[in-house]
Length: 119
Image (cartoon, rainbow, N blue to C red; front, side, top):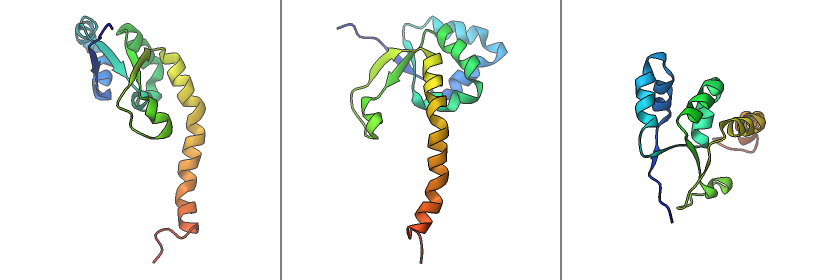
């Protein structure tokens, strides 16, 4: 089995790498022996600037880290690395986001109507 060192960065680091004066920092990150990883959480946070993030993730040869238990809302101790394919990741998010946002908007009134938080 071939092991890879994976570096999972917070989104603020990716945001810093997008700045015009960060070319040297991008070069240093690209030269690391680690694979830089991003997840579905990053996709949500990067949605407003997805074209620039797509280019950055490709430049850094990043990988997508998927937690197989996340589909069912459970933690799973084994995560898998998939190809980055940022265009696909963002398109999947943009297809499902309106439905998720609609459900989030509907939950508080439904919670109230069903008797939640009433005294």
